[in-house]
Length: 146
Image (cartoon, rainbow, N blue to C red; front, side, top):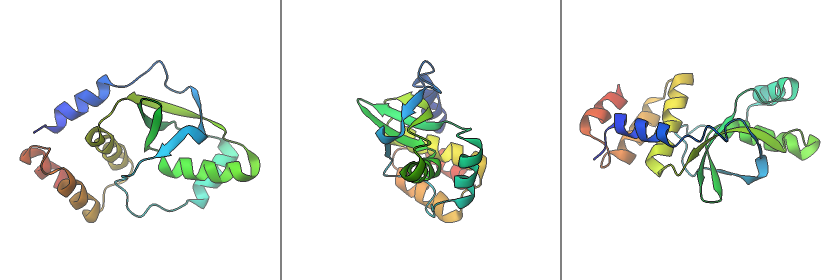
């Protein structure tokens, strides 16, 4: 069993700062199969902001071999793909790259970034705890539920 502190430390050791904020082909980014946010829909406001201001925040990705999976920035990615259909504004996007994150590390990082932006719903908390109950220490699961 792992504790969240060791997961967090492992994540930070895998950040590839040399590749951060470089322009990267949007078409090469794959959506993760897991997103802590369950009610993810398009965002007309974000789309308008992207058109007006461009991309202000990088998309967080995990590089595993030749696969680049979106860990955080799913809504930005979706909106930029929509904008590309008519304007090709976002062929190349800013990314923050982590190397070889495990599924647990990807999902923990996704949760941490999302929690800092907007608290999780009770259902989102429960799903995370249930998904990782066998991999994490019980003390961490109690903390996660608060």
